Structures are given as structure tokens and as C-alpha cells.
Length: 292
Image (cartoon, rainbow, N blue to C red; front, side):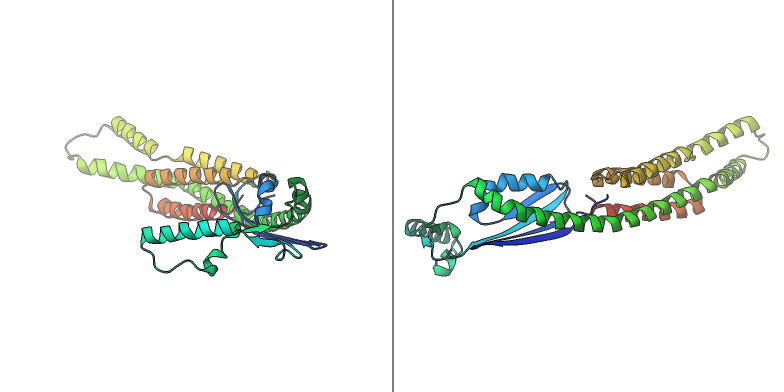
């Protein structure tokens, strides 16, 4: 199933005096980028947290917000005076070095969690993960479900746009014989106009030159490749795997073929149709920026 890269999931659990809340938010990103905003107790399981997310998601910027609270936590927390004094000295030195106004006060110090220590024992990594993993799993399920729901809408839109592109390619192909005949006629008239009426025209040579001109302006190969890219794109949509990167490559190739057709043709009608083709390909390109 096609997935979007945007989504949200959350979960909360209260067990005795312990409350854990996890929020996950993901947005577009070329690769998988995980940003964690959590209390220090989770530092020892950060690798496991990342691995759990990497096992479910392939692309996107994922921000993880974690709240971890215990009853009586404030009473069990004390200030580290030595660390506070060192921090004040360093901050004042930085202020003087950079010629900054103001002074260090309690409001400033309270923003540094490393100045506070817990009187209780820090739980082991296994205990932290055992409490945290079920909450994370539920939040991940919600996030993935939202990405899949958005992906379903993207799939419908992309399928329709690929069908529109296929119709435009068919219109261009249908116009090839008439465009080629018109080109031959224009070239013939130009050549005859350039020759003096007293100079005989070598019809064989004229036919050869017209054939060369027609071959240079032929875009049958580009149409064949466009159809191949469209077929691959439709197959990719139904693959059930993360396909954003592959779709992006196919769209780049479609742009390349459309540009080549536009540069080859001298027919006004075909040129106008190529503009429509490029517009539809661009719409597909914009949509797949949100595909995982």
C-alpha cells in the first residue's frame, strides 16, 4: 500500500505512579531523519527507540516527543550546587566574550536539566524499555495508519494523473503522421523558393534531404519510452513497498522525454500538447514528494 510521509500518532500509559506519553509527528524528508525530544532517562534506550522506528518507516522526518513522570518526582529531585556554580561562571564568561547584556538568574538556570539530580536509583535499561516499548508501539501504529490513509488518497490521485498523461501521449502519437506531412510540405516549399527557377531540381536529392529532416524531427522513440515509464510507474504504485524514490526517478525520465519531443517538433499543435504533457508530469512530481 502506498504511504504518505506525513502523519501523527500518540499514546499514553499510567501505571501506578508512573505516567508515560509518546507523540510522533512525521513530515516530508528525502531520507529517514529521527529527532528525539525526551527526558534523560531514555538516553540508555535511544538506540532501541530508533531501531523500532526504522523497522516501521523508510522515509520522512520523524519527531518523537516523550513525557515521563513519576509521583513524588519533584521531592526526589535535588540541585547540584557545584554544577550550578560552574555553569554560572561559564555563562558569565560567554556574556563578557560576546558583549551580551543581562546577567545569569534563577530563571536562566532552571532551563538546564543537568543541574538537577534524582535522589532515587536510575532504572536499568531493560526496565525502562519494558515500560516504554508498549506505549511507543501504539503511537507507531497510529502514525503508520495515518500515513497509509493519506497514501490511499495519493494513490488515487496519482493513478488518475498517470492516466491523463497516457491520454496526452496518445494524442501526440496520433498527430505524428499529419505533423510529418506538414513538415515535408514546408521543407519542400522552402527549398524550391531558394532555387532559381532556371536551376533544375534533383528530385532524388530533394527526397533524401526531406527524409533526413523528417527523421530528425521524429519522436516515436520518445513516445515508446514515455509509455514504458508510465507502465513502470503504475506497477510501482501497486508494489506495496516504499516507492517514493523510484517514482521520483521515473518522473524525471518522463520530463526528459517530453522536453526532447518539444525540442524536435516544429508543429504548433504538437508543441501545445507537449506543454500540457509537461504540466501533468509536474503535477505528478509535486504529489510524489509526499510519498514514502
